[in-house]
Amino acid sequence: MHEFVVRGKKGCFIQIALDEVFGFPNMTSHFGGYDARGIVEIKSGNYYVKGELWFSTGEIYEFYNQLVRCFTDLQGVTTFCTSEANLKLEVKFFNRGQVVVEGYFKEFAHEDNELKFEIESNQSFFVETLDGLKQMVNHYGELRGVRPE
Image 1 (cartoon, helix red, strand yellow):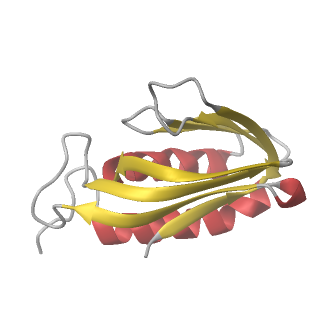
Image 2 (tube, helix red, strand yellow; image 1 turned 135 degrees about the vertical axis):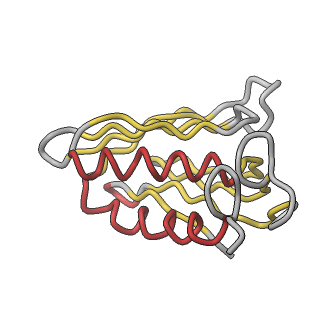
């Protein structure tokens, strides 16, 4: 199983794990990469949620590339927003290594139940995040999926 985690201070985290990838390696998604079903877990302060998540490996690929740029430059903002619009992560890098992760999760996009969160972090936590994302990108490829060799 592939997964990545965004860790923050005080034990806070966001973890996304792939359960199933559809069409791999032959049929790509119109969102880029392959359609995927997974699980998201979020712990922010005293709040915790675990729910099903639909996204594409192409969205992971784009998030990874943006995150690498922000991590390298120690500045910038990157966003991971699922095609279902039920999860949004906005990662903001500041010049002294500080990072703030903000966003929301809605189990069902059409309902008003929503967890809004803000997690304080720093650049050192993102080595693990980038490693997890890189493994996913290496396995599932770019927006066009896995390139034939």
